[in-house]
Length: 70
Image 1 (tube, rainbow, N blue to C red):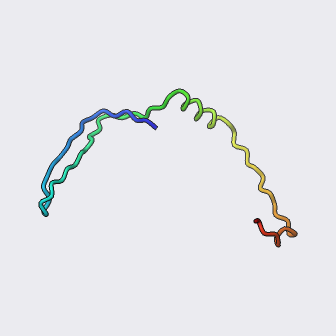
Image 2 (tube, rainbow, N blue to C red):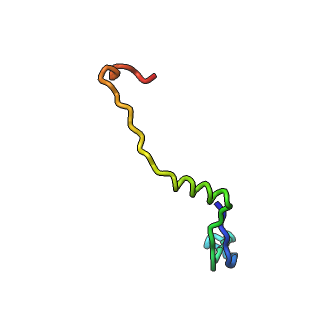
């Protein structure tokens, strides 16, 4: 999925207690939107519009209980 983001990127630099220089990059978001193309929207609508029909579960007969599945 794609997302559109507006904001600022801020990079920080500091030295840790053990003398190693560390960096951190932060993204400060002011606005965001989820993006999708038309085919994604159409696919999700067609899937959501179809009614869900429960499928019957096959029953196991007592005679099959000794059979191995492999």
